[in-house]
Length: 67
Image (cartoon, rainbow, N blue to C red; front, side, top):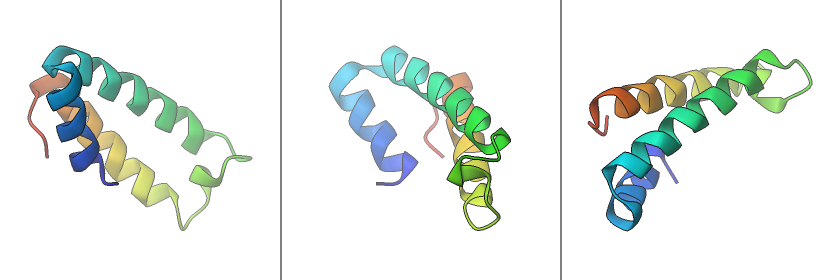
C-alpha cells in the first residue's frame, strides 16, 4: 500500500488530526530506520523509497495535503 492510500484510509477512519499525528510518528520511525545500518531501509535499493515516504509523510503532517 502506498503512503497515499494509507493516509486516505487513516483520514477516513480516524480523522485528519489522527492521520497527521500518525504521519509525523511514522516519518520519525522511517528516519531512524534509514540511519541504522542493520535495518534494510538503510540499504541502497530501499533507502530512496524510504526517503520519498519521509518527505511525503512530513508534508502531510504539516499541511494535511496528501501528496
